[in-house]
Image (cartoon, rainbow, N blue to C red; front, side):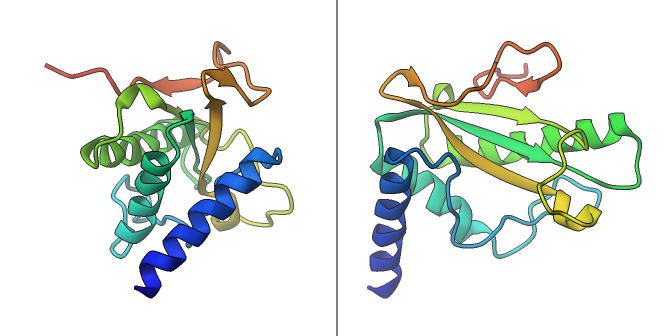
Length: 159
């Protein structure tokens, strides 16, 4: 019962925050991945389920931007590739939980966008979620057609 109450309160808080112009989905805990891999570590189901529940409870959030950043000692291209893979894995999980793939925008930035105030690679490696469209209207000042932006189409099916 407490978990359900917390989920409802957090979902309501996120919805209200978004309605007031806050741009980032606030998670109960950060998502973590195995080092140098696209595998989500154990104990992340609660956070991933929270995101899926948020989208189910807020159908007016018509697009969610999944933005992944990876900072390792690997090359810029390897960081970019890994960030896109990680974001795609999260998108896949959400579609498996019943979220329509057309509601997801999956992006990878590699190591091109450090977090404000981050002091090391661990602080910079992150995955963030932004309500990008509300009731069909874009809410972020964000150019989704930017040629430098690496995206993955979650509705694309590999044959």
